Length: 164
Image (tube, rainbow, N blue to C red; front, side, top):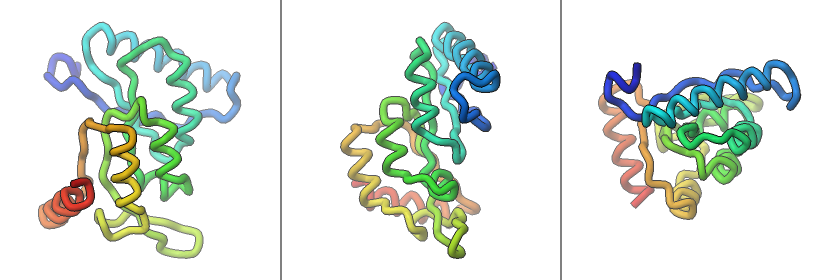
């Protein structure tokens, strides 16, 4: 359907990744991803998996074993931070597969809880991320997740300053 509508990049949530490598759930995920990837290869559509808070190292390991070029990942440092994962380590683990970046920030809102906040108002070190993106030579898509036009405009200005 994405091919018929025109976009060449679609984003789908990956859902929960079973921790046990040889579990039926993990095998079913691998089979589904392989089928999606082969179909994407055939029609020229990149399928970018949205990890949410899942372990990027495990997702990257799964994708590395699949013989398809159209499977990629989205990268959202806020989702990773909220899930207790290190956004910098995640980017290094996924860098060859990142097809889209969701520019969103997160802040600690209690001793054991983080929440998404407007870009530039959180605890994520965007200067370090800018260096990370330069290091991996990322040239893909960026999206801004904002609640209104003013927040979107401020987020664009923030990204332009930091990524320049």
